[in-house]
Length: 102
Image (tube, rainbow, N blue to C red; front, side, top):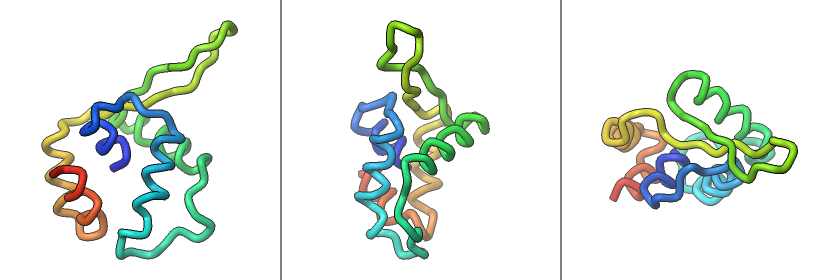
């Protein structure tokens, strides 16, 4: 959902800290069970990697350093209209999904 929101604002690829900031900002608007201890950057990175492995996200290295390392940044690798529709219909994510789809 966070990567989709950044996509709609034309702010992709997005790094993990941008995804985490979105999640923290919108967590209180969801009706489901809250996450104990909040949302850690490590859990966001792990989740982004899983979504990339499943083919839902693509990534590229940004902020490269002279030694060739950099931070991955993510963009959607799926049909945006279908994803919008699916998330708006989701009972838990509906409030946030509707706000970013409008």
